[in-house]
Image (cartoon, rainbow, N blue to C red; front, side, top):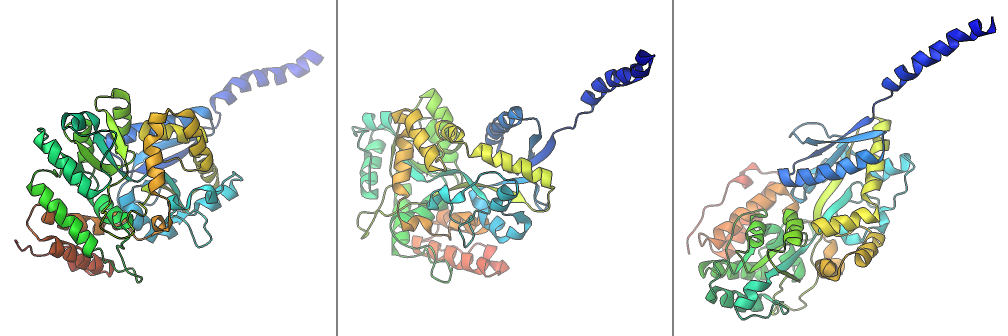
Length: 427
């Protein structure tokens, strides 16, 4: 009789067990929006797969951002988009709050100040996570240097030395002695900071049409005419040309963008890394360059369980070993002192050379300036239109930068006519 009484319970348990396993709660979906190209998106996808495989509660999904849509759980923002996202902070939940509510350890103050620029509140608390950061440096093709009779272990330090090197590279048959990526980032923001001049005044009005910037822009125009400077485009097109061995010298982000890993693995181009050139006739130069790159923002209005998943993903990104991998594979700057120490001990000396150059450039208060031309997408486009007009010889350097400043200030003041290119006047 006792067996008959407990049999239904045993059968119920036996039937329920497999059924319950089949209906186990699915992992909470965490959407991460982006506007990366295919190669960078694939790299991020691999990183996400690693996080998803380490736990079963959350599944981060990579989705392409659509203009006008509400923010997703996580939003990866490029340097060029940052000003737009800062202006719309109300649509995002501060990162430090997300981490605190999830009881996840997080101390944004451990990140170097130069890496937190523009992403913290008045108390220094981070409202977004700086990630994938770099600063412009000089890359040289060592084989091209040897062919030109130049010492690859003594790369140019100043723009005057760059001219001599470009001349010798050209005489040795180079069709691209020098090129650059990210023109406004390198040749306005960092050119200005490195040489101790401003891009805006105390009221936030653009003023990067001063003597140093005009002289530099005119110099590159002269180099372009002489075929010492070859310009390929506004983003990282020049990185590809350098990686293919076409160019002797390149100024670009210290990460060399998506090409860092390929250069590191293939060794097709023997690369040397040196500091960004400076103008030795400018008193006080060099000073500091700027750190910039991607930032990760958390959308407002999400479910509490989604915020817990976000907090776990952020903690995953902050792990020192993962930061070392970022540095080894993509050349990005480690975000915390612990990660930087780990990179120094785990990477080979040659692998950390570029990181050491980058860190040396970032020291000093100038690296903390907030207003940056390249971080406002519409101002950046205006500026690069005018730089291209100067470098192609269509507009004198002074007029081109005057135009850029005037149009940029009109745009910042909300005037729609700022978007129209200024009339060009030939020399």
